[in-house]
Image (cartoon, rainbow, N blue to C red; front, side, top):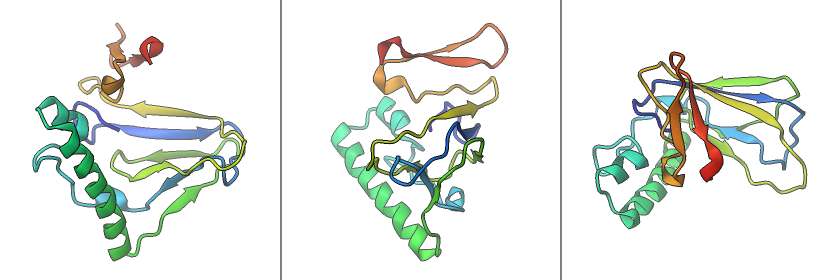
Length: 152
């Protein structure tokens, strides 16, 4: 996830039903939040920032592939194994913004209903919808953001 200020948020994933293997269950690398930063273009923490500063898409695609390979190499060197969160209804996972995580492929026609939330201070803003043309808006109340999804 990308925010205007890196590392200034936390995220949660709460299972609304039991998650079975094959439903695109959440994976993560325990301890990966301690990996050294990968800097796009040698100075940008994330792809949206590098894109805003003029990095070319082809170069960014190549760097993303290199970043993914480095994650796997670092995990292997440090003896970190990829784990899955096969949650039961009501289980929650709260994670550090730098924890490497994602969803495994969906291989069966089952659901994984959940609620995902992000928390940040009111001086930071989420920018993960930028590339899809979504609008991030701040509520009149302190520090409340929402994504206008009408454009997705």
